[in-house]
Amino acid sequence: MAPTSGTRCSRCRAPLQRPENGNIDTAIALAVCALVLFFLSNAYPLVTIQVNGTTRATTLLGAASGLYTQGHAGLASLVFITTVLGPFLQIAGLLYLLLPLRRAREAPGQNTIFRLLAQVRPWTFVEVFMLGVLVALVRLSAYARVVPGVALWSCGLLMLTLAALTSRTTPGQFWRWVDGGRAGE
Amino acid sequence: MSEAPTGRSLGLLVCLQCRATVRALQVTYPRCPRCYAHLYQRKPHSLAATAALLVCAAILYIPANLLPVMYTRTIFDDEQDTIMSGVLVLLHSSWPIAVLVFIASIVVPLLKIISLGVVVFSTWRRSSRFRTQRSELFRLVEFIGRWSMLDVYAITLLVALVQIRSLAFVSVGWGALAFAAVVVLTTFAARTFAERLLWESPP
Image 1: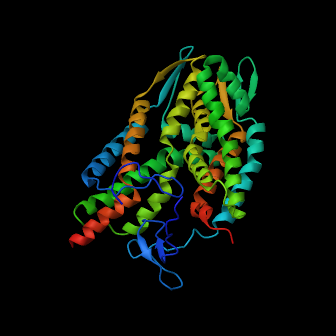
Image 2: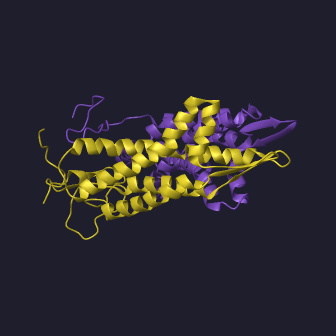
Image 3: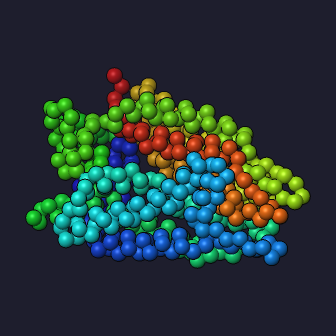
């Protein structure tokens, strides 16, 4: 079939995947960028509020651990997995697989790890989290002065970088790179 | 609509992991030559698993909306919020955000449960009507489902920030857990459903 964009399945009208031929260096650069943003998002406070001279700030991890100390371990781990662990595994896992692949080598356990990454992928909710923060800030702004922190901005950039990274490392694309490496041997 | 030949009729399988097209071999447990994943004609036990997850989600939707998701204790009074009363509070400060939260936390989960129910039931009956529309409905549901987590994150942040002992104190209610469980269960339900079952011809 001709590689035109916007081709759809004749039966269920789902968009068909084009034969991809992305650059592996772009994907690696995006992953490194995402890793830096990920550390910034976790190291700095997300927001600070000021009420009557009292100041209170929270980080991403602080938000999840707040739930844990209130006895909601289930909710805390859900928030932790979808906002911290999920993005980290996705970024670190992709770097682990892509760096050797760039030199036409295969990382140990490549097949299993990529399969696990495909399971983790639907559980990264950074964009939903950003909107959730916005909702919380709107609710708070009636009672307190709200100051956005460094992590809020880096989290927003992380959301965009992750979206770009995910769309450039689809399973079809990844296995095309693997096939390319195997053919060159 | 022209009927294109299917992979099954040509004796081909698609690896569910790496999307390689593989010739179906007559062995008991075939594996993909490219990524070594198990190969299946269809995802195993798909319909039963999706239906089970969906029933759990539908049951939990009730406590998720009735139980309080958040308690607020200030020096003046104690308050408890359900998802719906939270939306009403937001309505006073900013109505676009209130509409957004209403859609994400009340309309979307309900719509998701109902439409997945319709898709599963009609697939089980092997109905051949509106297949394209049902396919599109399923993909839409899969895409918007994650946005229901919105309120859970908002509550998480409020709990972490509003801990000023003398003035105000926010804690989580069990409704939030039920609500998060609905989102997780429906996400799993959509993921276990094998879309291709929709297109299986009636017996």
